Length: 632
Image 1 (cartoon, helix red, strand yellow):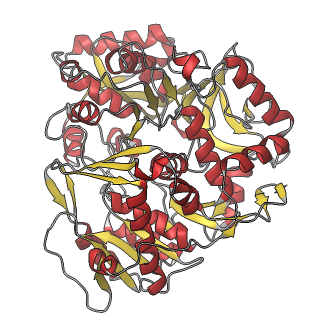
Image 2 (cartoon, helix red, strand yellow):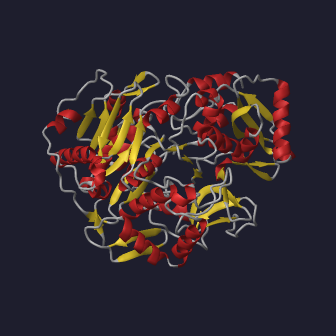
Image 3 (cartoon, one colour):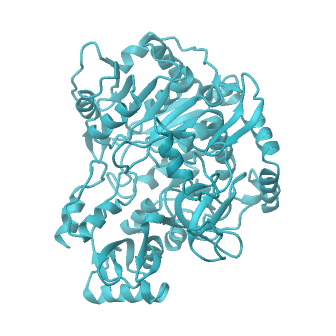
């Protein structure tokens, strides 16, 4: 039934479009760009490619915000909900496309009046509230380049990003809600602003109502600036390669690594993938749990979804506040139809217990998605059975900040699914799995994942560091300077399906054998006592690296030396004797960012007996570190 109603319709339709996209890429992308984007002036060339630099749809002029908003004004969509927002305290707001368009126009006028325009950089440091979406689209409307800084980042992280791109304007809030407490964003911003001479103005959104200091001549209230601004604004049109945003990759050391995405190619990748991967329909209410500060929030909350005229659901707070069933309450309360979340979140839901899911209907859901890391088959099955009720397809998507949009994914209603596999490449994407010399590895063998052709939504460079861009992403194989190195390991099975096995640096060398940490964690996930795990290496004089696993047990399970031995034996049976963990450490929690990613560098420091290094302000719960160190 899903297949008959889906946007693609069949696997044969996927094969037909994919074949065209790789055999006649210019014909394919020309048609897609003309059908899916609104141009002020048509493009002359589809692509200019001289590795490692690509230019897509050259000669064309358009406005990204116009493609996300104005195209819906005057149609039936203008009175459709663009954003349904629920704050952690329970407040709810709905903005139609017409209302969102008016707000974006007002902020665009404010930016014009502040002298912020084409090429100027704007830093956005906000909670997950509608104003964050408005700020991004207003920047796109006037040609300013936004850099969204995740609201969980420290003042030092904010300072570094502002200084790297020389932002002229900062948009922040008094605070936001997280686990029943106010996160004081303005206070953190003020600390950063003491060392950011490029910032001339600070726009402050009143969200939490906490007391904040306002710096005279620099700080202005968002609502006061918008009060007299007109609700109509003529969007300015820009070149197809005009920079849209800079997004700094998390976990970088030294100089921040600012990934630069431009306008037309990025928007086409986000729009086209949203249409097909999420099988979007006019009646959908789509919930992506990623924060606006990550690429997932850019592509699959704002640009990809709104260019398709979708209704998006925004949630400000923690997934288990005040109770572990907060997500499932919201799904039922707002009749959400699509849920796109991370495997770490799914494993957390599993750990909290099935009873929190089973008390809710979840009948509105029709499609599930996974993003951010490989999903182990047990978590996939739990997601499919408990959340999807054995009827919702799961799109397990692989992509990166640098790729801009989804590159390997099932297409619902078309691609036969395999739990744990990202399945097949999206249109125009030609991946290979190769060894250190660039030779394609045999079927079923692990190797490095490379993308062998350019695609529209690919990053264009690193901000103010083109040499690093070329070296990092295209410097691995001198004989193939056009290959993009993803940094991920993968294998390809007999059906051509791709299985992502995690970051290359998360592959351990144990007695001369390469073992992926994701593979170990997946094996542990099949044991009935295990809710979640993390595997890391510890330097070992004999083996090179010893394998240490941290294990969180399911509710009702008790740790013991006997269970630790069972788990070691279980991994050996699942993978092989070489993968038998040297040590199993039971834990009540793992160090995670607020977006749900495990901070492996912290675990590596702990197992090595080192003092934990680096910024920990993005951690969901800093007390986890002390608990893990105490159990070392």
